[in-house]
Image 1: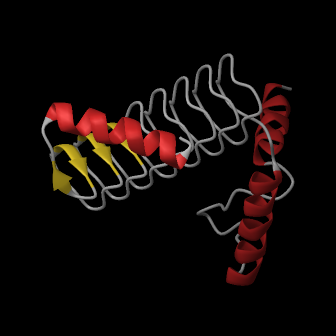
Image 2: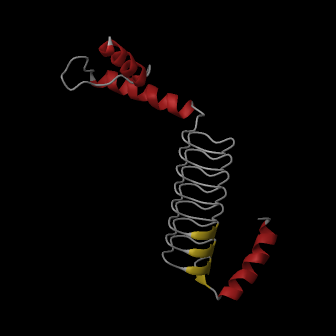
Image 3: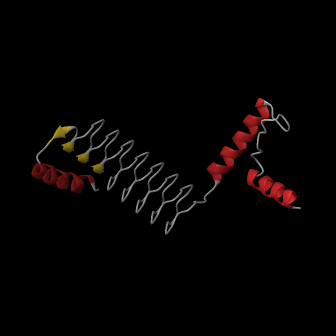
Length: 165
């Protein structure tokens, strides 16, 4: 009885598209069957709108362990983010793509370990950068050029107004 119950649980865990491949050879699949099952699983996942382990999130899709985010997609362990995609361990970011371990970034892509970036790409361990690409461990830069703290905030305030950010 317990064995049958466990088999039913395992069968349910496998889902309709993904059948467990058994090392013993029993029920082993051909490469083609495996590819078809993988494609079906991928399709099921990409069409899903569920989030897993999230708290207080609204309108998010395929996120896990996030809190208080809105409109994010495929993010992991982010908090208070809005409109981000494929980010992880971010906080208070807006409209970022593939950023990791960052905070207070806006419209940035592929950045990691950074804070207060706006319109940046591929920056790592940076703070207060605006429109920068590929910088590492830099602070107060605009278009990859260094500025004093005061100059930076004056120029960025003007650019934000002019760009409508």
